[in-house]
Amino acid sequence: MMTTELSNIGNIIQTQRNFFQTGKTKDVNFRIEQLKNLKQAIIEHEKSIVEALQADLHKPEVETYLTEISVIKDIDYAIKHLQKWSKPKKAPVSFDFFSYSAKIYPEPLGVVLIIGPWNYPFQLIISPLVGAIAAGNCTIIKPSEIASHTSDVIAKIINKNFDPAYIAVVEGGVEASQKLLAEKFDHIFFTGGTAVGKIVMAAAAKYLTPVTLELGGKSPCIVDTDINLEHTVRRITWGKFINAGQTCIAPDYLLVNKKIKKDLIDGLGKCVKEFYGDNPANSPDYARIISQKHFDRLVNFLKDGEVIIGGETQPSECYIAPTVVDNVSLEDSVMQEEIFGPILPIIEYTDIAEAIALINSKSKPLALYLFSQNKNLQNRVLQETSSGGVCINDTVMQVGVSSLPFGGVGDSGIGNYHGKASFDTFSHNKSVLQNSFWLDLKWRYAPYQGKLPLIKKLLG
Image (cartoon, rainbow, N blue to C red; front, top):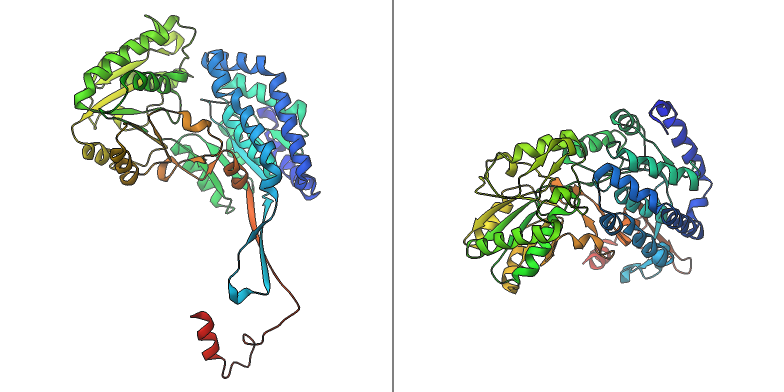
């Protein structure tokens, strides 16, 4: 749908409500068929997806397969488990309910809205869509207009393979989002920044619409002394600089034990060179910043601290080299907001209590990373910090495990998804209690005279 057709949004939602009321989406076989249809459509459009992400983000083809087209794994997982997920589950009842049976029925919510971001513009639309389909909903998708080429490909894939009464795409900018958010949905799933997340939640509150907000924040990465240094620097370098740092769970800043700081910095420098060569601007494996506006914001961060690796920029290409910054202050702008780019500040600590205190002084992050083989230290960090998720001795890989719910806490988000969690997010668990007719004890009925001792005994 083009921006000029925004007046049709209300009609499309009503059409989807009418389709939902037919009950067709409640058929599990129908859902599985649609998931298979989606998978086949992605496979058929792989070349177009790669080209779109190259045009939007200069994303290397390998990264596109690893982080975008790999969403096919989510589809396979849902197809494999959907029959089991969708079955009513027995719930236990206590002895005083001995004549009753209890079950929990997962049922679809209705018509849902998915608003996607620009950094992983394909995967972060399709992954929640898998959950919406699996749970039996009708869906309206709003891709990011900033990643315009990918938005166009998503629209072509969906329009070609799905009835808009079932799944529809609304393209456009802020006006399109505003018009969508003015409508009533049965769930809104939003991935993006915290500021816009607050706008989405405020709009949803008007209709008491439940929301899933996948936001971000400053995800810390603690580096202890008890590590394999070579593996550590590789994993940090990869996790920070894939997609030129434009990843919501990228390590935002390093908290490094003073004893290992010099060795770690040396290792990072060598690793950046190994990954991207002497001049990463010429590397086919390094992405670009999405837009001039985001480039300008990131360049301002380079004024803080001391650049010890990288720092080169090319405004005409929206290129910022993989950059490591030392001697930053907690008051510097680079430490005040999520970086969302290829700039990695380093802060040293001498005692883990300092690192924990710094993390806890900030908003709860989407991810927390810890490199250490020390079990006691691992447990202490897990117990004394709060974050959406934790990954120990690696970065970013937690997002690829379907059995782990993915989501934030506090400012980093509300709700979660992936695997069964995606199905749950787009479902309502309907409780059903059933009594039998073979017995009807009269202790709960009026008149109540003389029944209090029995009731106290039952409640005791």
